[in-house]
Amino acid sequence: MKEMRIILNNVAGNLNCSEDQMVLLACIFVSFPLGFINYFIKSPTLRIVYGLVTGLLIQFFMFEDEMIHCLGATVFTFLYIKFVSRTPYSSPTLLLLMLIAHFSYLHLRQMFGWVNLEQKDITLIHMVLICKLSSVVYCYEDGLTPDTKIKNEYQRNCKIVIEPTFLEFLSYSFYYSTAAVGPYYEFADFINFIRLEKEYTNIPMLKAMYNSFYELVYGFICMFIFLSYKDVYYNSFVLTKEFSEFPYFYKLFYLNVSMLVYTCRYYIAWKFITSVNIFNGLSYDCEEKTTIDGEVVVQDEFTKIQSAQILKVVFNPNVKEKIEGWNHQVHLWLKYQVMLRFISNNSSFVRNNRVMLTYLVSAAWHGWYPIYYWVFLDFFFIDRICEVLKKDKFYERLGHSSYILQFIVGIISLHACNYLGVTFTLLKLENGITFYKNMYFIPNIIVYLTFIYVVYIKGETKTNETARVEPGKKLDMNMVLERDNVIKKIGNYGKNEVGRKKIK
Image (tube, rainbow, N blue to C red; front, side, top):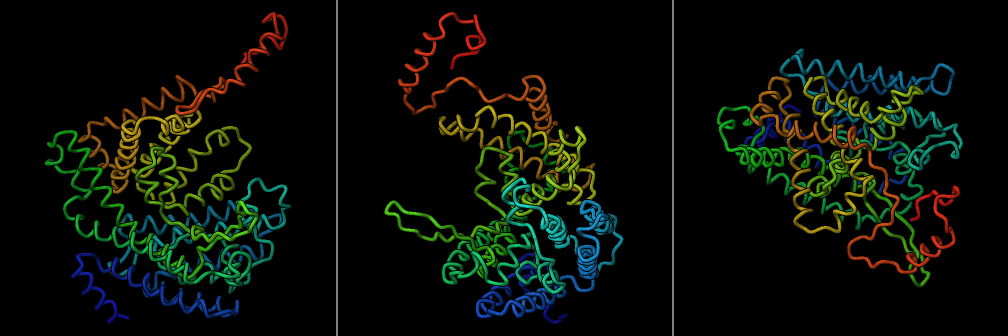
């Protein structure tokens, strides 16, 4: 193992990247041949054992003794499911709090340097494991609940009726195609994949490999951008005196380019691992559609697991939807397991502030640097602004507006995300304040004033009940004539309850 790490370290030096990054890439790419072999294993038991053993080997190669934390959390959660779940003493929320407490220790250990230089940082993969373990517990609790009482289709599809075996649970937690860097996905999908049931009955291998190639290309493009520009545009430069002396608009340009280069660092791993899970079929989904001729056709999709939706993050003018596209699988966990389950309380305060509390949980999930909480609160403010704009049909009208206006709104939303993204990477609170001073706090002030105006002064705009004619559409004259006839029938406006209603 040491010899292999020496080889990878030499390769990393030639590629101008760190040893840890090279090890990660090596573990991702070894998953491709493992995925090819997996197509020829049909026994569910063999598939479980194969995925577990290879996954454990990958994770041990990456993290060595540190993976004991992941094993401990997994065994603890399984014992909870075995002996506590579905009893009067069951509390999935308490379990998640305990997992987060252990995870917080790992974060604080890295934050304050309570580790030896030789110890590997296990927090990245442990973050994904927290999502997996908590999801299984909540979905297992749903197993006894009738579908009619489950609020949404996503939770109905993910519920677990039969108690997982220890082997199934371990394999789900350490499966080879997600052992290196994730992503999070649902246990119900994993079991169907292992047993080759439902949509996984007939995975089109050649189509899977073909679609996997596209994600691989995205990953290599991001790798080229990152390796080419990471020493030219880097986020820590925003703390320097030289940056503070730049013209303001060049500062905006620099922080945006540096953040786009920095995000490529994450896109590399996410696109490669998405490619792996498309390649082995775990991301496969299909839908039956009826053509005009009445013929039923199966439309193959490979979008069940999407770590990042780059085009959505870069080009969507709605910051709320940009956030959903960034680390998309974790967004699903935050929405369905944290916001709708973990933050579940009859208190009006909790109910009215559920979105804000979800952002704070996300901050804690990332770590305990104080700047994280400032950044995620700012993202919450922007989320609320976008939600109000959406209710006011702003984005619908924007879609019919000139390309120049769409471009301007897109640039503003991209600036907002990159500005907070740079702050997030600076880690220390004093670094964040220095960066904000260099930007004269102007973006922060704009966000806070806009939030106060839109949410508190203007109020959350309700859907306009008057008929609107969208640009490019003709006025429906039948609707106009019908409205005129109604007015004539009502006659004396204001004399009765019907007459007092506004005529649309």
